[in-house]
Length: 217
Image (cartoon, rainbow, N blue to C red):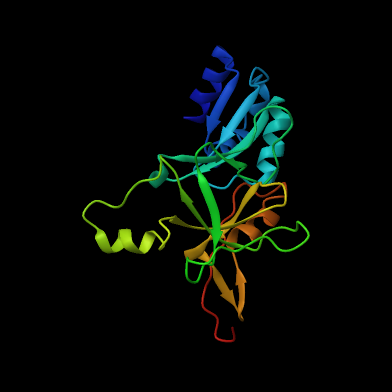
């Protein structure tokens, strides 16, 4: 598959490339990658899973393209956020800004009700669960009223299950999944934070962090 993709990119010389993070990783680690000129690609979009910053930097170095990350879910048809492709406005590690007509807020992950406000002085917003409204957001799960009820808060915001924050400039960041949080002696640890550090090592192709029970923890 990757060989076919490389040959197609080399033959047709596209200027835009859209892929999931694992595909970017696969291309970067392909044994013949240096035999193919991919510099026709000017812009890349990544979605469906978190894009490690190191993967973004490496693919930009390989192609000369601008690689940006977006965000969305099946329930949101699917895009809700994207980084600017032009003007140098992207922010590494961020999913960017909400697209037009999309109302996004950060909510208390324990209750899904109270909006977590910005601290004083324009600092980064506290972490919480990302919730949203918009014309692309679904109205509920088919024939699953209880699941639908638990997915929307009292103000009608769809609670995504993703934990994140907003920086002072309005960029959104994802730090993990609510259900994937690992409790380490009372400390909340999200796997992505550890994975981002490990993936920076040149010998690491892909990494996944999981929690396992420990008698002393």
